[in-house]
View (cartoon, one colour):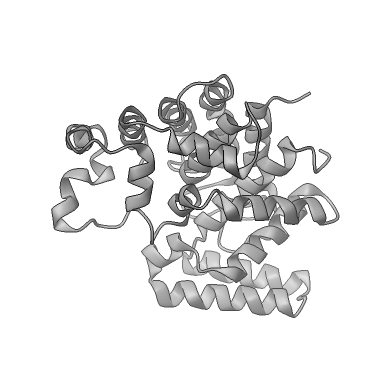
Length: 280
């Protein structure tokens, strides 16, 4: 029987194995700087931090350890956002993997958790928008150098996530009881076929519902809306696999990466696995 940490690791592996997953690395597609094997190695490397969460460690240190292990592979940032969802969910699974318990886990985070989150940025480069000038001391890209400013203001990790919304839908999950993650789990459980294929279909449905915030930050809100409209058209028309494959190839060629949607898919996979709603 798999542990919660084992299910979280498997969720990361199944997420990257799903195909076609427009704009993202999958078992058929690499990006210029990130390859399929980097994601496999990142998932395995994150295991120690996931184990910490499963054993009851605080969210911040468990997250930092997971990111440090993930970053040991040669591709850079593979699953930072996914781990920011998975670590509190794994911690919640010690009690009950439900939205109320997940909300309680993030509400109990502390300034020390926030400091560990900032230190995680020392281990890997993460794409983050430029902050307003008055918030420069709290720029997460400063990593551990920003911790004194963070501590001076007494910000918990939930406070940090709150300051990231809107504009970051991973942070938004922390403020909404992981609503899209749990919805993704229900879709994965209700679908038919291999779990990796269900994950790819769920990815497309999530992308069709709401513009991906990583695409918006990197390529602009107009491009993010275009991608969502195209995903919605494919979903609503029950498009054949060939058309979805063409959409996936086009986004890769244009360098458009809906990475936040992939993070939500990984979280949904974990919830479905932990609830034994899918058989792997």
